[in-house]
Length: 194
Image (cartoon, rainbow, N blue to C red; front, side):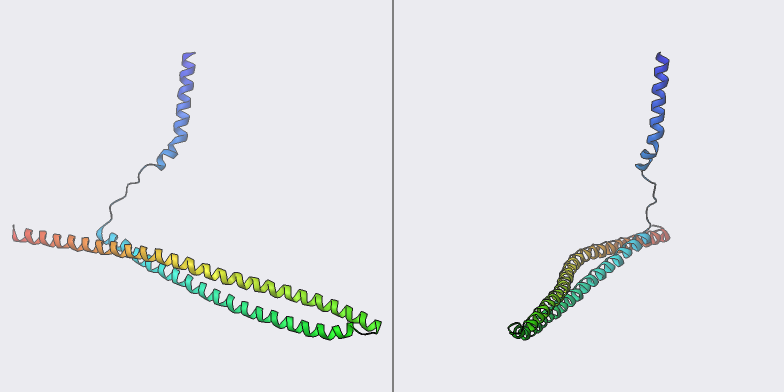
């Protein structure tokens, strides 16, 4: 019985080891060679370029937001003008129908009522569609404002990133220059024999 338990325990440990081995290899540190000074400088320069690209993207986002906001604003004004024009037309048409509604002729009154009903229905539908377009224009205006805000935040982050990248690039350049200077001094000492 003891050998059955030992062999069972051994099998469990063996199976667990086989199953966990791939996961344990994920935590192993990959062996990477240290970067050469030129590679460090190239990476720092890439970061500076990335920072400049981020700034450009943020500015473009702000520009797009501004144009979207202006477009929404102009569309809103047009829709409001359209609503006012439609209201005046409706009132003018209704006033002419009101004269017919007060007529003594029964058929003329019933025709005027039917025309008034049709006119109100048409007016209501037109106003509904214009208000829907007005609402969409207001949404676009708000989207434009939000895009500008996002662009401003993104611009600040990009400026910080670029500032750090430029600082790092200068440090790497300085270290490379210092390294080159030391190498030249060592070579001169070796050549002079001292």
